[in-house]
Length: 186
Ligand code: IMP
Ligand code: MG
Image 1 (cartoon, rainbow, N blue to C red):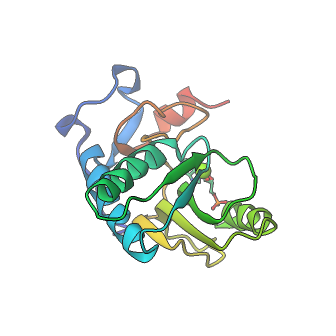
Image 2 (spheres, helix red, strand yellow; image 1 turned 120 degrees about the vertical axis):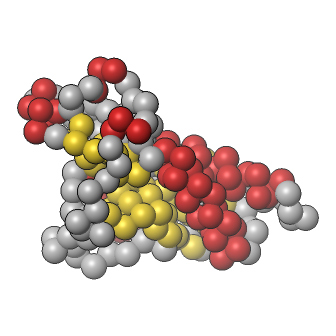
């Protein structure tokens, strides 16, 4: 909800060097990981347990990608069909079944550009998983195939999402405050 006040920062732990720089916790780390477990289940079911090339969009996508691959691997190991998974970080070769793993879709422009460049390689299938999708009037209408959380139109950090390269080492997804923006402004 757009008026969701978030969780009080004092309910959780977070790195001391970010004390005073955050407004509130939007999505605690445990909920992020639990939600990714379910996304992995949905993805495996849709893809029919075929071999997958997981394409991580650096840098913000690396935490989501690592946790998603971990869950996909666990599901595969506990099923009768073993799924082979390769992971790459946006370096293009001849790919077949591609799962693009992105941190956040805002306007959707970044994903449009990426998809058009990957389509040149004529993969069998391309699916997009984004941990976050923003509700914003600036959206071009792009919707990922898999969405972790739909969030209000806020600038968020943590769980590998950054503000000028800071806050990637924060576990929870949080909303940065004015002090934090000023402190890490470039
Ligand atoms: P879009 O092109 O507007 O969809 O923006 C997507 C890209 O911008 C993402 O891949 C992120 O790298 C970055 N981005 C957008 N919103 C945020 C945010 O709230 N925090 C951190 N990075 C963001
Ligand atoms: Mg990104």
